Image (cartoon, rainbow, N blue to C red; front, side):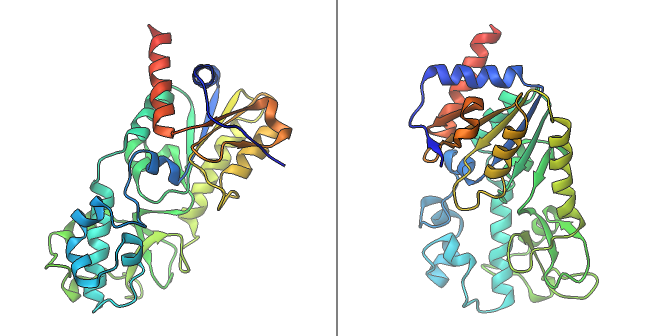
Length: 293
């Protein structure tokens, strides 16, 4: 059984800031709700961002949304598919950093922190040093061999930016399709899917996460969960709850517009704020500034 908290008040904002300021360690868990709160593009809708950035593809394939386009089964050629993929990754890596990420940084930058995220949109890795982030579901920052013939990921930035300059309408020349230097198979995004490479780089992400959690054992620790839904609680939500239960000095804080949920076993160690993440973080920054003055 879990307890759901509705809404929030100013006292909770003050408590949020105080808990962070008093903490020895902060482990942040960030998921899709962070980017949604910042007004990030909705992959499931034919919104303005889709119309502006993928208009040529929409006119050609009539997919209706970025999600449908990504899983489009009717690409005219691999050159067409890669034209889309290059456009997609270029857009993801060049869109502005969303405000909730900047505000989170202001809130925790002077603390010992680690971030674990299931997001693949590179917002965390652009707003924070990558050494402080565990990307456990992949990221468009990297490419991998589509046949997983060897255990290596490749930074995508230079590859994609060079290819973006070679775009011809909605395609790139076939001979420029990036391929694995070992087996010749096409490269693909290092993101969770059927062929996702759970190799040494993947395990390094979990090792960073686990090392930080071990350091924080028995210490005054805040487990700050931001925008984590109920579809995949096993990656962030459940581990954070269990770590809180194991450490009586810790506090579990969840900020979520819909599911601000805590188990009764840790209710006395928890702060559940049901509200817009962007608004809550902005109010926390303002509250912190007043305290500093």
